[in-house]
Length: 408
Ligand SMILES: [Zn+2]
Image 1 (cartoon, rainbow, N blue to C red):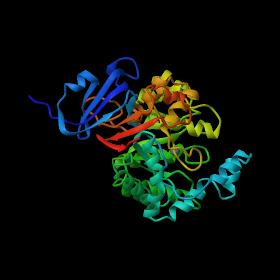
Image 2: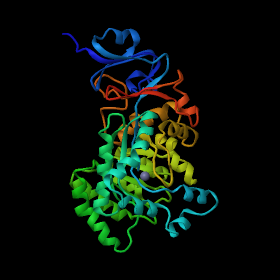
Image 3: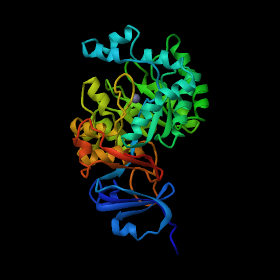
Image 4: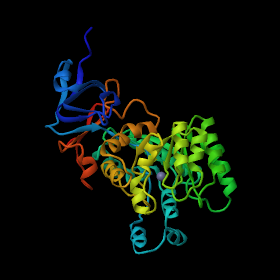
């Protein structure tokens, strides 16, 4: 039987980081490697010689990695990418000693973003988020989860989701998965009615535009009971569950995520070891957001603690205008090492295969035949630079779904 010819060959890879557990110790490195794909799908991974044995189409695209390292495309499993408004003054005020609460009382904080975002048209939302999404792709992210949460009421929330989906249609931006996050900022006025609408009409409408439902389970935000009601309502219309859990206090979010069998529980800085063990037992992925941990201070992101509890770990940007304005997964890998106690190998796996797990995706995150051909060619032969070279963008070329999406 003749194998179908490859349409893409990435050759002359110094160290090919597959993140495939079947290739031995993490992160599954092949020395002197290559990858071939047919259309969007990887058809061969291995040494240069092994992959060269695979037939190549006459018009195939051949990319020379020039001895540099290659990693799977990053899967950023937690972002708030679509927003309008400007909060750099507020960031400076916080640095000068004003608290998040003082700023919120003065009309700043998340309410400022809500006011600007809910007033925006779809095209404005897309235009504002596009350069952020492009920076994500240029730093190696090939899949990103994008949440609503700055609209509050139905129409503005749905517009945020529609804007995120529009971005994902562009082959030069990351693929987008969307999450309906109606319980984020608190509403003005009738809280019970607001939660009721989110759990009924909200989830029913969002089911057409989103894959997950999420809530901010925290003192000063939404209670365990409110979040449980939303996630259960989401499950009835086919939305997987996610939670912002135990970020600023130990509020029962991780326990709730475990009890409801959520796909992921995110933040977790204040979760106890027994909470993390409950996540592990329930198969819930723990998503650490070390950029937000760094900006807000407080306990470190619990990367090592999650692994010791036996849980699956993902690392993501939390890209948002208040607590982490960063699109960079390489920076998050570095912070997961410096703050979260992960080894560089564990951090790279958390940023790729871990991110895929946190989105319930089994078709990406590792370089293996049959998976999506999403990968980043670095500008260095040392994949360890991802955890070591702070603040640089070590990504030169990005392949999304078997096609060159950014070339350095
Ligand atoms: Zn978040």
